[in-house]
Structures are given as C-alpha cells and as structure tokens.
Length: 326
Image (tube, one colour):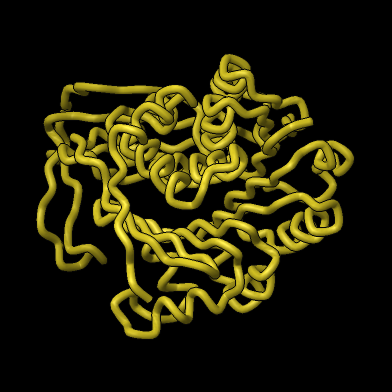
C-alpha cells in the first residue's frame, strides 16, 4: 500500500546563477522589476544545476524523504532529458513505473535564471502532449491513501475524473492547481468541496476568491470555496492555514535564500506528510515552513528537501506559528 501518488508535471530544470544578473526597476512589469544581464555579452556562470523538476516529481521525492511510500504519475518523452527524471526518482526510491514515456514527444524543460536575492525568472519549454484519462492506470491509484494532484496543464476533465475516483475509493485528495486550472475558475470551484487539502500562493488565492488578500471579505470568501483545509503561501511574508475549526499563521524561518524554485511543492508535500503521520495542523504547518525554508536555501527544488528525522528535530527547536483571528 502506498501513502501518496503524485500526479502532474515532470520536467528537467536547468538552473543558472551569475553575478552578472541584476535586478532593475521596470514599470512595465507586473512587479515593477526586471532581471537583467548585459546585452550581446559573454558572462560567467557562478552556479548551475540540471535536475528533474515539476510538481509531481518534486512532491513525490519530498514524500519519500519524509518516510512515506510514494509514487509519481507523469508524462515525459524518451529523449536524453528524460534520464534526469528517471534517475532522480529511482535514486529517491519513488515508484515511477506508471509514468508515461511518449516516443513522439520531448520532455518538458525549464531554464531558471536566478537573481542575486534568490528570486527567479523561469523560461518554460512544454511538450505538445499532456496527461489524459487514458494514460492513467486506475487500478494502480486504488493502492494509495492520498492523491497529490499538481498542475494538469488545464485538463479539468482529468481533474474531475481523479477527484471522483478518489471520492468513490475513500482516497484523500490534495490539489495544487496551476494557472491553466485557475483560468477555468467557475468549474474548478465546483470541485473544491471534495478536496481535503488545497494549496495556493497569494496570487492564486486572489484569483480564486476574486478579491485582493487585504480585502475584508477575502478570508471568508476563500473559506466558502469548501475545501477542508486551505493553505495560502505568501512567499517571504509567511503562510496561512484555514480549516473549519481554526485559521493560523506562520512567518517564514530566517534563512539566506539561494533559489525560490520548489518552495510551494516542498511546503504542500510536507504539510500533507504531517497529516499522514497524524500530526496536528499546527505541527503540519511547522513541517511545511521548515521544509520550504530548507529548499530555498539550496539551488534546485529537491536539494534541500528534509528527511523525516531532520524535520522532526528542526520543528522541535523552532515553532514559529502564531494565531490569526478570523
């Protein structure tokens, strides 16, 4: 019996960090900043890394390190890049035998350019195919306690099938939707009452609620979507957990950020791992905050993922959450 099956994206991530990169004001960008390097130049790379990425591989590896039996169901090619995905999953003792390798498609990859402060700009190259219902071994899914669903590239038909399957087979459901799912907000919201854990970042939560996070009705609107537990991560401003019984907040752990890639994946998977290990919600939030802090302290989305013994030790030494009133 498996503890978790992660479903969604598998990519190869190519990380590049250079002292030549700088952050400059740019009013034409949504955050008023641009990551800049000199035009028509040849610059030195100070740090680099090539490894597997994507929500499904990141979360499945996180679960495995946290002492759980995990599997990954993803779609990728049979090109040379796919070897990075397979090697990482094999080394981390993740069951990947039910992932799909397409002969006529390439493995998705990203080039991640990291700013001096750890923020990053991601350039994405996606294959022409995405996970479909016919790719899934439904009998295999019956062998798990949780389905951890990451972005399905907007395929809400598959999402509906997965949620229905989980509900019928008493499998708990975690969902971390991507921008393509949130673009179909009305349909997506109809699924949320069947979700046991919903993970959103600040921008995603505002899209779902249709309100800015500082609006007085934001939290009540988000709670009304119906998921049993909802997490809202706000980057360096901490994270909130909403459930029927309580709403709590935790600031981040003080750390020197190297790369913010994988912060959300590490947060969500550690929180769900805490639930599987029968921890209370406050402890689950602590696990999530510490795992995320460790990941952003390293290059890559998997390098800093904590083991079960480390996360237990660290959360005993530092319990940063505080109450957040309704």
